[in-house]
Length: 402
Image 1: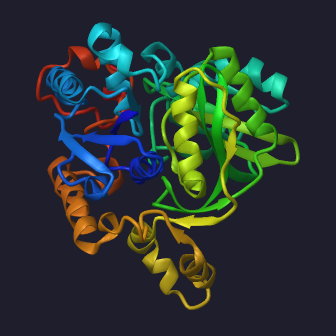
Image 2: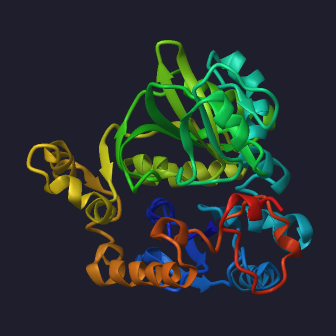
């Protein structure tokens, strides 16, 4: 098959490309960055640099349509938040987009899963069937029984999350448009990720983020057992007849597993499927053609995005005693970007160019690196298809929901 993988900046996109490339599929990449790391992979047949969908949706949709016409992919596979814009383009122009968008859910499903408060309501019946829990989540109304967590309904990296709030403080935060309050749950954090076709699981992984980029993405990961969390994903996917990627953030304690939020896109879970690349590449193709291959579980291993661990964790690792565990993990974990059979994406010059592009965007937006890395593709609930050309993406919760 010929795949168009979008969000080429993400380590997950590089992993998807290696999985599909090793099993004989042809891969084209797309992103609104000029120096995405995955462009340098030996399995990249071609790449397309698109306008920013968050700032120039009309231009993005026109360029994406041209790319589809030129390369004729059999399936588009989205890895980052650009999925919302591709899905909206498919909704607005189904003839040009929808036949190729079959490896992803439609926009009306994505928007429900992406909104943390709406997702909590959707998840309750599936959670009850699977034997897991959904924390009490509120958009408005009286709050009791602290502590509470408050966060924008559309957010990422936990950069605006407020923990341990009293009922009064949480209720005051809810007066800000676009925020939700969720009962704070303590315990062990972990994540699940899976790919489904028509509600049937094709592959899955469960992992614990031991080390993070700030408060955001996991950059040091360890396999865990998913248990009932995996059952929840299967129940929800079956009810939705879901095709695409489903990822969830969880807290586990003595009461069981509590699902916090959903990410309907790629996450670091895909890296745990690398040892099964050829098998998985065939299974993805078979499933999209209506066959029913057996589900493939992720491998048990430790993984790291090592350049990110050096960037965000160097201070910790330099501490003689406090950094010992992280140094040991760094030495023995498999680097998700380094592959002896595909060396160019992990070369220092490749990584430096990609990093410099994000730094430049951070300076222009007067933002930190994490937010700059997604500002051109993130969707915060705004009516993006009506945005004038050239408008900067919303960078705060009030603007995002106006």
